[in-house]
Length: 187
Image (cartoon, rainbow, N blue to C red):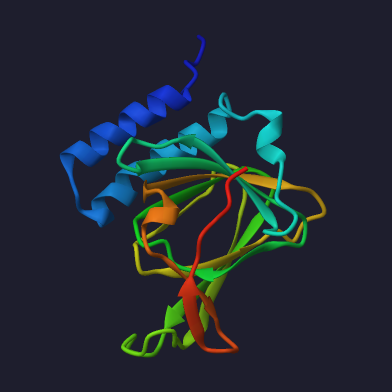
């Protein structure tokens, strides 16, 4: 018995269905998680150029889908060896699933009250290694950082309620205790 391939088009249609039925970010990430796992493991959408990275940024951002209003943004993100992304939030719900290789996610907790512009105190709050098919989900305010500690480029599938460059999200420096806008450069 053949197993049907779960295509990117199938995944997008399922995302549209979920987000038409609820606007609750907790419910969305709970429902999208298994779909993201399925899409990541099917890999029918994965192309050789999805492994390309921007050396300055440390990772490559490859847009797979985005609605005209910038919602339901799906990316393949490739991580250079020993590189990653600083602590950041997403400003929208986020579901990430491993595709190829291992990535370390470090979770952070904001401990100041957020009332001082440009200032943020964050503390490390856990860490988890994620591989192919494993899923991690975030609410808009949650903070994490990512690092590829392997010697090869890794790839993960990222799904967001809105394109990251339209959410007003932030990156954080735990040592300098600062917060600033975080935009990504697409490949």
